[in-house]
Length: 224
Image 1 (cartoon, rainbow, N blue to C red):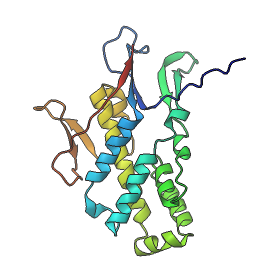
Image 2 (cartoon, helix red, strand yellow; image 1 turned 180 degrees about the vertical axis):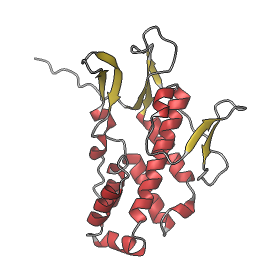
Image 3 (cartoon, rainbow, N blue to C red; image 1 turned 90 degrees about the horizontal axis):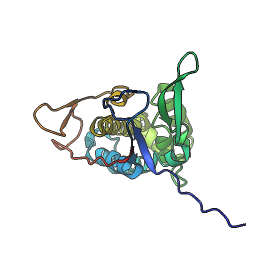
Image 4 (tube, one colour; image 1 turned 30 degrees about the vertical axis):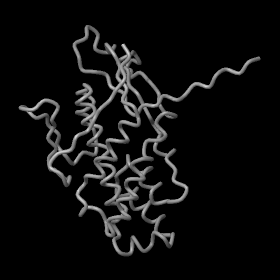
């Protein structure tokens, strides 16, 4: 019996249900998929433009850790993707939803536990989780010196990664056309609004980046 050809994983990082007129809003006219590489590239670009003074000292080492974590943080999404349905109180179909539940725990960095903790912690920016991870990291000599100099170094780096991820996510939702999902983004310390005078320009307030403006590209596939 011939072996079936192995199917590649779904290599996208986010799913969108465009906010367009529809006789039956629960059934989308189309579904749009943002390639995972596009999302990761945008997050990395935002990290690179983040105000250098926000990174723990020494800046270069801190910056490299956050960049490496940004490249790893969503690596488990293709394996964890699931298209699901949401039901009402009577268990009747309400609408389609999607999930990447558990994807962050597949982010591994064999040569740097700090980077791995950043990548896996990017969806749970809480005192409890940050304290737990910093406690674990402080057991290792190579990380003790960093935390001795700045006990909040891990928390500060995680914040930068988290906010870059969330800013990119909301911008992707707005640009690609899923306004409902854009309004439901969490962990945001920044307000994003469309510029009234310039097309495809969005204002982020407060502006935490070092240049006056950043250009991002948002790609997507669509399935009707």
